[in-house]
Image (tube, rainbow, N blue to C red; front, side, top):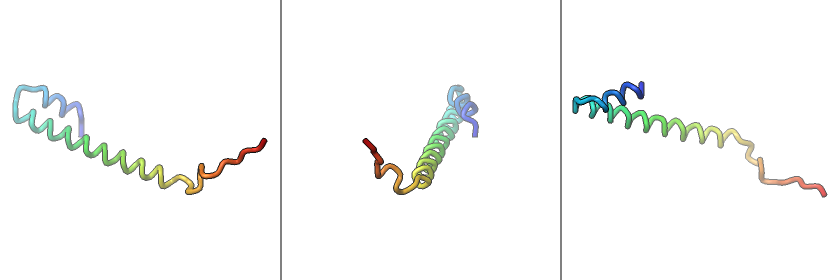
Length: 59
């Protein structure tokens, strides 16, 4: 999906094109939010479970 095409449709004078453009932008936003959430979950799962729980300090 192309964001520029959806933005051009919204800025046009045709109400039908505007409605379709708004719907496309909404779908793109939802898709990107879902992809970001999945990526964050994958990053969290890739971390070592004990990472950062203990500090080794020598004086």
